[in-house]
Length: 342
Image 1 (tube, rainbow, N blue to C red):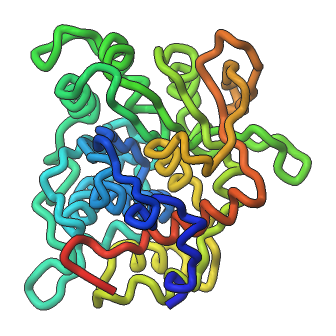
Image 2 (image 1 turned 135 degrees about the vertical axis):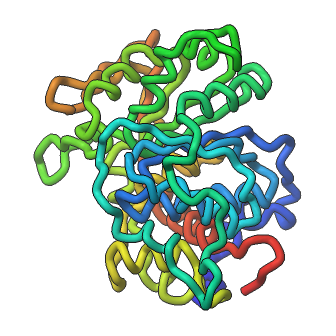
């Protein structure tokens, strides 16, 4: 298979930790905030997270969803269950943002005989907890300064978190919880270079401009933005979708990708890049800009102003890093769950 030809050395300790003699010191508590259902890259990003958790690098403590459709939460539950982690808390928003039917979350209704093709306990988003409550509970349970959040959808849930008051979960406000508990927020949003010579109005920002503005103005810890140009420069190879997920008859990542847009096509890895950086910020997979401040205007255009007091930076990418990141993302996305093998 294509993956077997990858050079171990280019993945460093991600794919070769035993060779490099490096092991994780502590699993990072990770929250994924996603608009899953709108694009297949969110699903591949979940595969990356589960592989990193299996390797001991992170611990997925919650998934919150910003696409307002009732199939999204059971779909997340089905993916988590596929990887043996069906107990992970899932929260939903009820915002009315992108309520359209997804091209692939209908997989939760597929049957093999009289059984679910992808087993899951959560049957509808109507039965899921509110995203802000899930976020507050997850943050309150973790050590101070330990949590990393990967936001790979709209800013809806995190903006609402900032506005939440103290409650039975924690006497702290949402802003206080974020300041005390979160080490870093890794966001797939915005664009920081021109695309075809034109400024780019990025989807995750444009769909909820108000929340993106709140996040950029008010989030109290460091934010690292992975702009549209980063994922665009790292297309996921179609040959991997066609070959590397065949260790089971039905794989939720492969089937989601095919339903979203049948191969051969190399889909950009937007959300995967934010997840990879969230867990491995110091491994050299990406460069980062100087410190500064990201602003979002009334049309959803993001701009960056350098400044040493700013809490924001954005990812950069060299041609050499592009090769390394592609290989790492393919290796991690397609890694079998524990107990399965290629």
